[in-house]
Length: 196
Image (tube, rainbow, N blue to C red):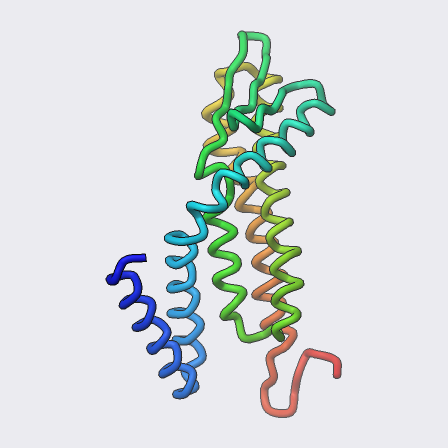
């Protein structure tokens, strides 16, 4: 950690303490989440990307082995897909690992005011596993599409179909974790949706 990063971290923590004391909840959530996301990208992402890539490749390869349509090679971060027009190797890289999406989810969750601390831990574990499995489903669908329709289907499967699946599943998670929880736990005067 260089001195510039340390100064930025101290300023971020100080701003958070001022916002907390001033009871500016929205700004505390916004600046806290954004700052934590940047910290995750700087410090956590370099450490967790490689193990996450290997895990995603291994689990997706397991799906391919069950379906007998493609194979996974976690040590090389490759998914090997045979099809009617030959074969293609898909490299599972930093963007395919899901680390950015997980960091965004955890950063928002940690500063989200609707949950207690233990609830955040439980929701964080379940949400992290959910995003991991959503990413596996995305990669498996891409590989199945390439296996069935040939190498020509790569662009459509990867760029459009895979993203629709992954971000559709992500939006579902965000709805249940953030939107629905906020609606259920909101209180207006003496009225509340939550059962006590």
